[in-house]
Image (cartoon, rainbow, N blue to C red; front, top):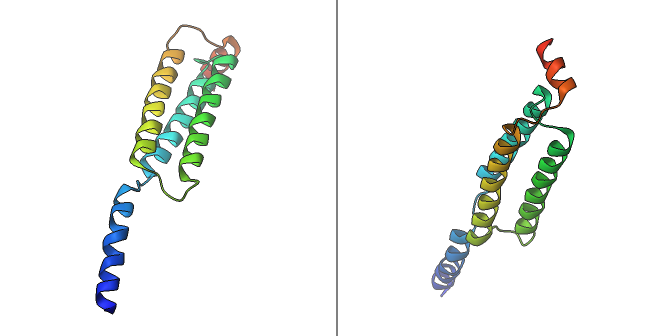
Length: 113
């Protein structure tokens, strides 16, 4: 009786454990994007407005991750949604850094470091 009860609980919890996703790739990408934004700002490739907009977008991703974790697990749907938002954020970072708008003082300062 005890063995069947243990077996049933293990089988019942298996689908829920399979649904939960590890958020390490999301956190790694967030750190990478944040460092990339900082580097582009330091080099003068991002203006102050672009910099703030991109950081606000990173905050939005952080809020999505926090909401996904609030119930104790990140489902596949939540994981894919956050990954899609991160892909859009990566494209926005690259687009803003290569749009020929730059911070004159920061670009001048970057030359003499």
